[in-house]
Length: 90
Image 1 (cartoon, helix red, strand yellow):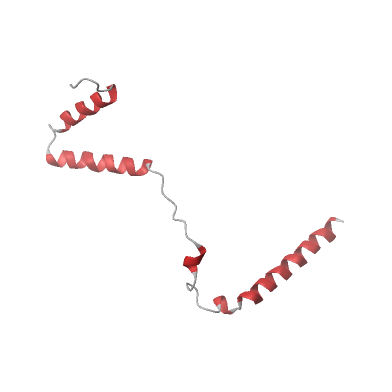
Image 2: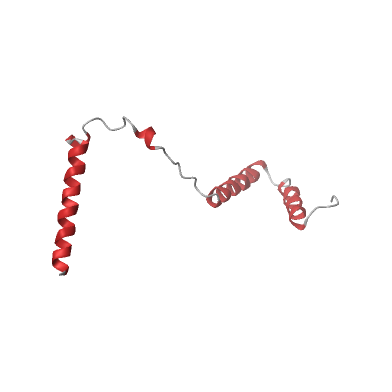
């Protein structure tokens, strides 16, 4: 062993030497196992999108309704719902 190796790198070197005694198919199984294990440990990267990338994805009018009509209707519903909650609380 080379000077300056840490305990972990000595263990790794021993494992590499042991793996050389395996058959090709056994090494392939070992590699597949190690790759699967590492893939589980790596956190999945979330893809972040910019709003500008979404332009044109949904044809106009979406859901057969104009966007401004939808916004106005949902605001009216929210205001009515909020007023109802306030009345019930009094």
